[in-house]
Amino acid sequence: MSHSDTIPLHPSSQSDIDEIENLINASVHQSVPSARPPSPPRASIPVSVSVSTAPSPFISSNLPPPPPLPKSSVSAVTPSPPPPRPGIATSGFGPAPNTLTEPVWDTVKRDLSRIVSNLKLVVFPNPYREDPGKALRDWDLWGPFFFIVFLGLTLSWSASVKKSEVFAVAFALLAAGAVILTLNVLLLGGHIIFFQSLSLLGYCLFPLDVGALICMLKDNVIVKVVVVCVTLAWSSWAAYPFMSSAVSPRRKALALYPVFLMYVSVGFLIIAID
Amino acid sequence: MDPNQPVGENYANPRTCFFHVLFKAAALAFYILSALFIDNFVIIFVVTVLLAALDFWVVKNVSGRILVGLRWWNEINDLGESVWKFECLDHESLARMNKKDSWLFWWTLYLTAVLWILLAIFSLIRLQADYLLVVGVCLTLSIANIVGFTKCKKDAKKQIQQFASQTIASRFSSTLQSAFSVV
Image: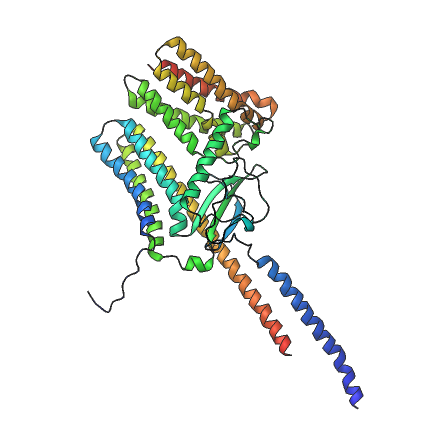
């Protein structure tokens, strides 16, 4: 009697044990993705970061957050600010540290260092001429904005009459010109990112800005022509690899000619305004 | 007046609120007043646009993350694609945000854009293309911030919902586990 009673309980008990083990494994499996990535040890509010791929019609002047420091090198009492990141962003492994709770000075330094690194790509020989897509990967519109305003100011100071018209024409020419050039590349079937192109064309104005400044100080026409030709060649040389690689080789001339034309018109403005 | 009435909630970050409003007010005031008193278009353009750009930067990088706990930017990944990045505080921290700070943040964003639109309409009526250039730049910066923070806020809500779902699922499995351990 008792022996026959114990036999049916055994498989039921075994199935209960199996089910408990499955639940333990399931809960362990579920807890792994929900765990929050470890944040750097400092007095900060925890944050979360998400990424969504979308076309970006808006101005952005942020550098991605710097890579996290090793924990042993960070003091628990006074956390040291992370070092500024190199200009070309590399997608690091692991979660990006938050920037919501950083001090304001870190934000300012990051933006300024990005502008400087983007300017170096235009002024000095481009280390990414072989792969121009990497140039100005961290695009921003602060540099182009400043250069356009500076060029407009220089031209309007040089002009003896109609300063307002000169400034408005220069600004509108450069701003609309950059947009039209980018749309031209897109319409030619080129693979280009709108704001990256705007950023590059704006940074390439820097040599022409220097030329305009020199022409404002010198009144000699021959000196003006020489300076403008040199800076024009420099701007075109800086813009060439990026714009040419954006379209297919057969349409390269169609993409490059309008860029050259815009810089020539700017150069002509610099020479003609007196 | 009433001694029993509880003291109203004050701004948690008065200095950030001040700078959040300062550059907007300065750009609008300088544009409106200089159109009346100054006749030099270049000065009007440069000062107004610089103030608007400074306001854009301050709202995007400083007051946005301090007043409402949101931040947005755009970058290009290794595949050459444009990627939106959003950051927001977690649920508990967002709940602790000051309501008056948040109210001031959103209302001043929308109010500034509305004012620039009105000024653009006035420039159109008076057929002043050069002043329309000033208003166009300022309006572009203002709308960019509105759209950026609106997207960031929606993304924050989505994350909070995901967090809530995970919490419920975790509690359910925990309840089952404890029930079976009792058995």
